[in-house]
Figure 1: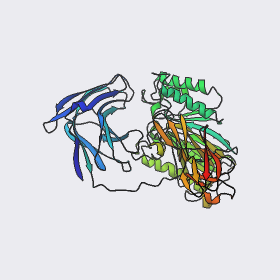
Figure 2: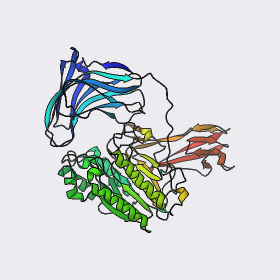
Figure 3: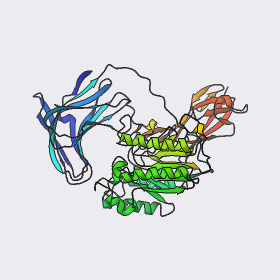
Figure 4: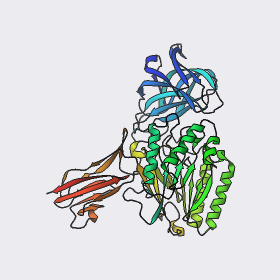
Length: 542
């Protein structure tokens, strides 16, 4: 493996020191490097608040890393204070910065080379953003100084790999809407506002999301964690006020705590004063909902009693003829679909146990089983062993994933078939046909909607057609996992051209995005994304 120094850190003007939140301080200065040359010192004070706090050393112009690096590292003069040392990278796919861990704690003094593995699957080339120290423990208040020298990458010879095929799970409706035969509930997560700015864009996005969800007449609303960014009493009070003002008792609200509901106090004490117990179970129209606390990164960290109770709830649901499905909801996902996998349940044995329990429940009873989570900043939907694994992205905070891979802001509308029959034995595993007891509409916020179609097309010719959602600085293709409802005028066939009736002027297949001219005339194509509608005419000529 070849090592290459990509920045010697001998030019202090190409780096800047920043901190978060504002009470934390950070400054930079020139220092002696590990080899006698120049380096950059980061002086920091992680004091003044019990919230998570960090001091950053960031490049003013991000460094493009050469080739396909597998590791990134630097020489660091440690201060022994124990801060967590991390770095951020951007990949070519876009989305939020990817985080890698250089050291669990700066517990050494003097020079040491530290490095992190770069997760496989990131789109090359990578850009280096920043290196930083972070403290999450409220009682650890300290100042310190580290010196950083010789930003280095290590890489193997470059190879060209075909991108992995996108797996489209049928639980997400990419064309159509939840029908009247299903009852509906709404889910949002990761708004992440604070009481420091009660009229901020984050608060406005939270309110907007609730309004959009309630407009679809759900039977209840679930907030699956990280509604707030910090959990001091005034932050929790603002969360309560927003819910009171926007929901006003029109539907029940079930609030599952996330990791940010513990930030500040270090536990759920302030949150629980207002919102009650962090775990609960309720039945609704034949579906049992088991809400669990993963605020400290795992269910076990939230109390082993809730794991024992989950086992009891599954056993009872298996026997109970009135229960046809079970949905477990917690903030942390079993698996984080991003290459870094930073956001999944920390205890991998626990994650395996949950899948096994739910898979066994599905296999032995034929009843539906799902685990619905958030936290990863990405909308996604997968399944394993018959267990559905829907994942909601962010309602307010900027997403982590790329826009074409679930990296958008929005919410989920979930439809449950209350009359779904128990699956027969051959149909209880992931590889067999799914009964479709649960369907999702993953709805992005739509600031603008663009319909991209050719104005004209010749008979027997085909061309791509599609739509794009615009939100802030993101352009999100209307394709899995985005939900949309495609329609058209009477002589436009929706589906493959080979299945079109003889009188059709054109065919549009939402699954492939292909528009095909069949005979002369004009048709109209329409798309509806989260109640924003766009139409365009298409003329077919000889």
